[in-house]
Length: 314
Length: 303
Image (cartoon, rainbow over all chains, first blue to last red; front, side, top):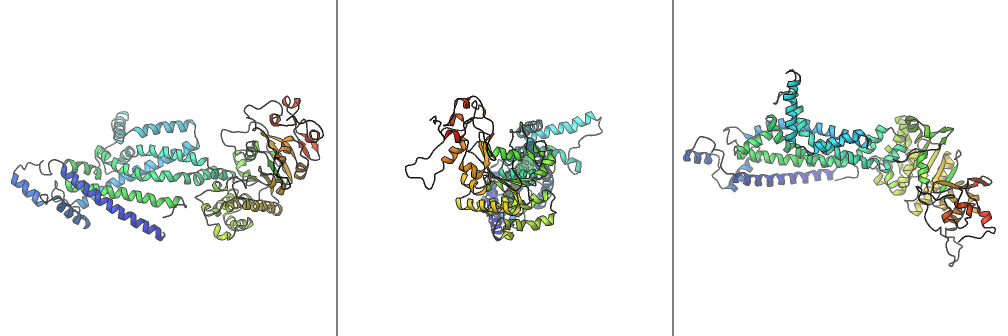
C-alpha cells in the first residue's frame, strides 16, 4: 500500500465521520419532532411521574445540550440506555443485533453476487440464445419485485406450499438461529440486487467481448475459459464493482423489512420497533450506525478498483 | 499462397477485403460473418475444417497476427510480460519456467529498451510504437510459420512506422517467419515485400513479384493506384491521378468486372463477363480483359 493510498483512506474516514455527525444530528432533530414520547404508551399517566422520567433521562434539557450529551457518550463508545426497556445498554444490544444482520446480509450478498455474475457472464457469452432470453426475462421480473413481495411469495412457497406437498415432512420453520433458516430470507433480500448485477454484468461483458484485446486473446490461441475469465471478465468487472457499493446499501436497508417479516432479531427489526416506541436513543444509534456502514462499504469498493484496474491509482 | 519465409504484401483501398481475408485465415471473422465457401490451406490441411481444439492450437502457434491499433490490442489490466508469456504457455511448447525466461529476450528482440523492467509494465505505460513491438514479440513468441500484420503501422506516426517495418524485415530475415503485410501504403510494400497481391472488392485483381508489379502493372486498378502516388520528380503542374467513384456495394455488385464502372480503359466485354485471373507474365497474374500493355499501346482511353 502506497503513501498516497493511506492518505486517501485517511481523507475518506474523515469524511465518513463528518457524514455520521450530520446524519446523527439531523435524525436527532427529526425524532424529537415525532409526536409523543417513550413514556406515553405506559400506564403512567401521572404528570409528575412523566416529568420525573423525562428529567431522569435528560429529555427536559434543550436539544443542543441533549445532542452534546449524546455525542459525548458516543465518543466514549456508549450509545446510551434504552428508554423503553429500562436498564438495557444500547451499545452491546446494537452490536449483538448487528452481528445477526451481518450474517443475513453476508449470505444475501453471496447469493446476489454469485447468481447475478455467473448468469450475467453466461448470458453474454451465449448472447441471443434461449438461455440468454430466459435469464434476461427473469431478470426483468426480479428487477421489478420489491423484496417484501419476494419474501411473501417465498414464505408462501416454503412454509405453506412445502408443508402441503410433502405431507408435513418438509417445511420452512421461520425464525432465526438455525442454519437452515438462513436461505429463504437471504434469497428474499438478494433477489432484486442479483437482477441488477446480472444486467450490469451482461451488458459490461457484451461490450468487453467485442474489444480488440479480446480478439488478440483469441488470436493467441488461448482456451475459451481463459479468454472469458482472465481477459474479458476482469475488464468487465469495473462497473460491476461500482454498483456493489449501492447494492450493499440496498441490502442493508432492505434487511429492515425482511427481518421484520421473518422475525429475525437483527438491527432492522430493532430499528422499526424503536421508532414505534419512540426509543430515541436506539433510533439515532442505529441510524448513525447505518450511515457509517454505507460509508465504509463504499470506501471498500473504491479500494478494490486499483486491484482490478492498474490504471487507477490514489 | 505464401511460401516459407516469404514476405507478401496485400494492398487495396479501404473496404476491399484485406482485413477480412486476414481474419479468415485465423477464422476470427466477427459474428454474423462466416466462411461460406472456399478453403484455407495451411501445410496441406484446410483450416476451414479444423475442430475447435485444432483451431486453438493453430492460432498463435502456426499462424499469429498483429493488429492495426496497438493502443487497444493489448489487455489494459494485465502486465505486458504476462501477456507474452501467456501466448507461449497456451500452446505447451514451453513450460511455465521456460516461458518466463523467454519473455525478456523476446522483448529485446523487438528492440524494447530495458526489457526486464518493461516486462513488468502495464500497456498504458507503453508508447504506441512500444505496444506494437510488444504485439510483435507476442506474435513471434511461439516461432510461428506465418505472421499476419494487418496495417501494423497505420495508427503510428511516421518515424515509428519506419522502425516497425525495419523490425519486421529483420525478424523475417533472422527467424525465417513468413510475413503477410496488409496495408494501403505502397511505399511500405515496396520496401518490405518480395511479392504483392492487389485486392479490389474482395477479389484478387493482380498478383506478382513486387518489382514487376511496380514496373509494369497489368490491371488498370493497380496502374491507377501507382499513378495516384505523388512523385518526387513530378513538376508543379502535373495533376495527380485519382480513381473516380467508390468501391461497389458488395451486396449488390455490378455485372461483369467489378472494377469496370471506375475503369478508364474499359471495353464492352467488361460490363458483361467477369474476367478470370490469368497469367500475364512470369509469376504475374491479372484479372482483366484489356491489360495495361494493350491499353497503353494504342487503345483510346474511355474518359
